[in-house]
Image (cartoon, rainbow, N blue to C red; front, top):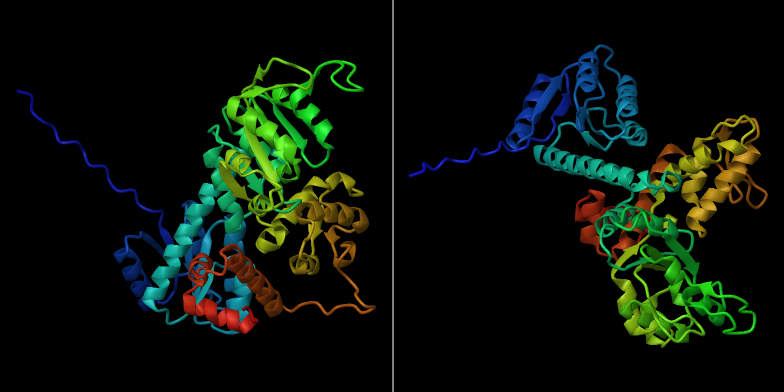
Length: 466
């Protein structure tokens, strides 16, 4: 008789430790007790040199930092250390918990990149909630960075860049659907990067070694689009002087990208539907169908359901092409991504500069970018960075006057925004964008923004957001 053996129970995986930087022994004791009770490991530092050493030695996703620390004990030095920590590891979530509760320090800490600012004495429940959210945010950003690296590695010249929740959700969905053969429908305004996302999905699919063939359905008249998609035989119509392979055939074994599918003429929709359902195409002027194996990715800036209600788009084709729908948010809906994208585009424009080096954004130019609505989305932003690089000349920094939409208006030079105004403008745009994306669901918006529902309502009232 064989003796049964008990399988070893794996130890639970513990989260990386939290660095607690606090010189007050009583506060350290309270913080440690709260965090360790919740299952977190805590490492402590009671001065800046010790904090600097611990931070360099270990992965520390979350830091709780007191601004007033020895040996200097000034809030200015504390803000300097905050910037130092984030310069070493930008992804770290630094929670400032300090008696320096003056508004100017709070705003400066947030501006410098602090995840949150808590004024002493800190409510233990509030501290735990903020730490849990910071940990979750850190883990999410690590996941997304890994995801983005894998997506971009196949096409480094077309990096999908951004940190806003809506953009990250689209990126995660793209990664999940990419290895399958499911049809994908990419929606969003012109210039949001729909074709780039389609190419990214193809690059991460099992068909990556096959062709990716793209066509804009709104750029050609009906008869030419049909010939382009399905091909034709010599003599099939006037001007058909030789046989032509259609894009369905060109994409065989790979991916066919139908851009602006909402503009496809109604008669042609029937033929495309048949090709997708049967896997067979019939070139113009040919009697015998041809078998093709393609994965379909479509894109549109139109509301296809609205087009269905007016008979402009076939319902059966809609359900055939929809598969997995991925929506790319407009740039105005992801304001926190604007400076990141602008910096990326500036790096791509370095060859336009007089010295071949990428230009940097000045604070004033960054404010102007954040205040703009970006009707042209990524295309407009890319153009503005190209233009600004050229106009900057010998200057190393981009100024508002280098932007086509900023600078003097109505013959007057606008007053630069103060730091509190800049923080409030960004906060208001983030709240408006989140509410718009979640269709006004305030509970979900509050959760996503890291606020209580009551806190969100107060901010909405303050900014006049209906």
